[in-house]
Image (cartoon, rainbow, N blue to C red; front, side, top):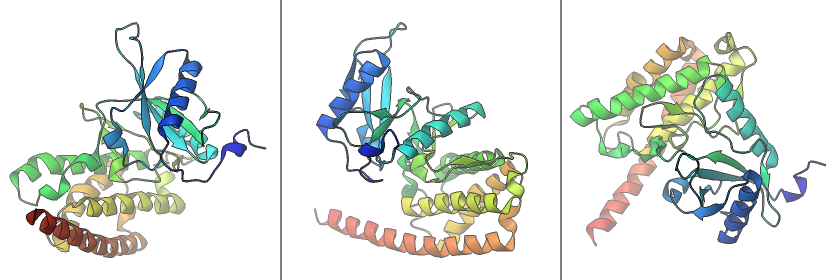
Length: 294
């Protein structure tokens, strides 16, 4: 029997209760030998997580006079938690900037559902879903100077991951983040893996298929974010091609996106984006009408 088996409820858990949070923070304090307290800082950003992320803070300053902060991510499936920790370690060994794990195994707490992955929190971490994408349009000076460079960097980042033989597995904008220096931080790796042969990974059809999933996931995430919401589907796709896919191709040094099968996958992605954008625009219109009547 797996050592965590009795604690598995199901793969998706409800958000942790305040009691569960307190019990978990107390258990973490004992595990690392430091007094901690529950912190509600950052919970607004964490609300997008499907794992009920919450935070703990040192009750005392460390030797450098700082308060260390910890992110606690809960899993209903312990094997997923173990996979996350393992992949964070592997990604770091490959030179990728990642979240630093505090414990080398998931934290199991008595009377608390699931298990937890604990990492050091990066307060300045900015996720790409925090950008007000819908406020920009092609040709706008601020779009060209602020948004285009961000999109290009996202394409380059994903291209670099794939060139290093890594499939992410959940490449939504909320899972793509940078620190103020502009360096990307790789995280949320429960569905990720590294191809056994880094050098030839992008020549392998199966790996290409998984890379396509990363690419279509991020494109559809752009559609849901309101990117180019006031523009036509044609302009949406043109901006994606020029500012996301072209930098990806250049960084990954691979032309597999141009294969017929990949082209078909992109065409299916475009069709899905059209539906997503249509539904999203209707929702925005409804909200605007409600606001206008307030």
